[in-house]
Amino acid sequence: MNILVTGGAGYIGSHTCVALLEAGHTVIVADNLINSKAETLERVMQITGKDIIFYQIDVTQAAAVETLFAKHSLDGVIHFAGLKAVGESVDKPLAYYYNNIVSTMVLAQACQKYNVPRFVFSSSATVYGENKVPFVETMKLLPTTNPYGETKAISERILTDVVNANPQWSVALLRYFNPVGAHESGLIGEAPTGIPNNLMPYIAQVAKGKLDKLRIFGNDYPTVDGTGVRDYIHVMDLAEGHVVALARMSAGVSIYNLGTGQGTSVLELVESFVAANGIEIPYEIVARRPGDIAKCYADVTKAKKELNWSTTRNIMDMCRDAWGFEKNYKD
Ligand code: NAD
Ligand code: UDP
Image 1 (cartoon, rainbow, N blue to C red):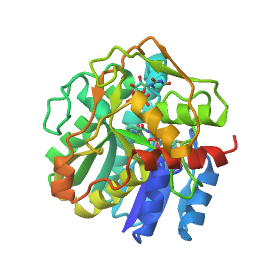
Image 2 (cartoon, rainbow, N blue to C red):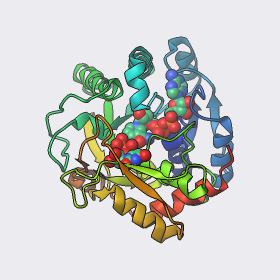
Image 3 (spheres, rainbow, N blue to C red):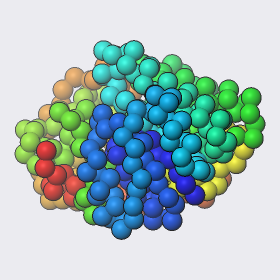
């Protein structure tokens, strides 16, 4: 299939490009490189030995998007492009609402106009808000605590309404849990600018000596050891989930949790990193981070049953590959 990957130079997008190319698809990337580098796409081509067609465009710009759709006969779109920093979204709500929602609308419109049958959307477990774990696709969504989360919930609603009006269209809303790790080659991975907000890249930078110690946000949650619990998923498992969803999606909206179904606490992740890589991670316990929930993990029954997809990589693999990329990575 000819697949347009928006945000394909980014963290999850680039790993998905690898999985798509390895599955024999033709990949066209649209990315404005606001949070990524073109060099990542060269590395994807190096890993796979296959070419990518690249457009450096902003996918909120309808004219540029239409030019691309007119040129390529697309079988599907995977829409990763978006801004994703939760804290920044509180300070810059307009930038987040504009970029994340307008891009979804422009791409949906182009799919309608050019009869592109499949649309896969990067949603997030954040749309479950403070529901009870494990999160199930049928749960009523609760308000999220920040504009970023709202952009995901609103985009899901827009796409659902478009399908209601056009029931022959196929949309998959993929709710990611916590993607971590990197491609096994160590050539591509997560390279946040500045000090990382997320746990795994922070740990990896402590391991490298770029940061002095990890600050663990709270040890008084109602969890196994008091620290926050998340469902970490290896980014290559997540990438492969997209390839499977594309192949199996049918008319209408389908919603899938992409996670492992296993919760891991902050302290457990630190211990796994130390065991996988033999590097000590100094840490201190500090106050809770505002907006954090105690536990977030998926019920993965639906993806297993309907997509015949489940994860194959464990926490040790995630820690090994996160470090494999970090130790090679040069700012
Ligand atoms: P990323 O920032 O690494 O990748 C996003 C890419 O989109 C970047 O390459 C950026 O340059 C590009 N981009 C942003 N706005 C654009 C625009 N208007 N036009 C063209 N390109 C644009 O982020 P990621 O971690 O790979 O996340 C991919 C998607 O998955 C995002 O939609 C994100 O919200 C969602 N998601 C991520 C996580 C996570 O923890 N990483 C969790 C749940 C959902
Ligand atoms: N966390 C932490 N220190 C950090 C970053 C994160 O203790 O420097 C904790 C955070 O409180 C949460 C877990 O690690 O319990 C995962 O956080 P992350 O930001 O990676 O993911 P999210 O909270 O968005 O699910």
